[in-house]
Length: 132
Image 1 (cartoon, rainbow, N blue to C red):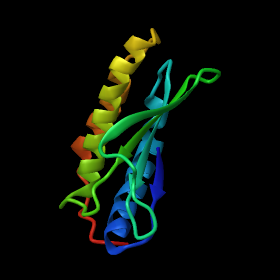
Image 2 (image 1 turned 45 degrees about the vertical axis):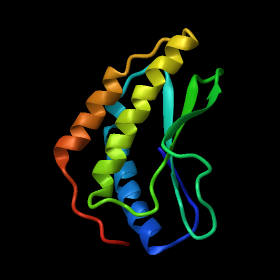
Image 3 (image 1 turned 30 degrees about the horizontal axis):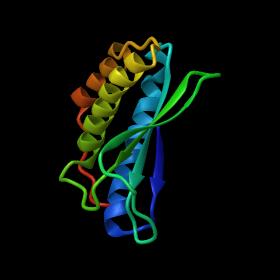
Image 4 (image 1 turned 180 degrees about the vertical axis):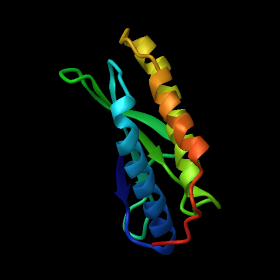
């Protein structure tokens, strides 16, 4: 998981705190994950310097040598009440976007290991983020 912050604002700091916690949580569970495709979900957080040039989710670059696919997610300027849960939901949608992408390119992909990891994160629940 990666994060691109477009500059520090009150809102981007809230996103940053939630995304940093999510990244730590994923790192703890990553060993359980076995997949033939390496996926990096990269969150784009708007700030006072830069804002994403897209909305929602899009597939990024694919490196065939190590079967690495980047999925980019833009988040809204104003974080919701629970930005952690919003980010987990966006990751679920990003994994969902990999399915048709892999089918079009005839690349094997089983989303279940990723969805299982996300289900563990959803069941944990996280504290509210008010800025860091």
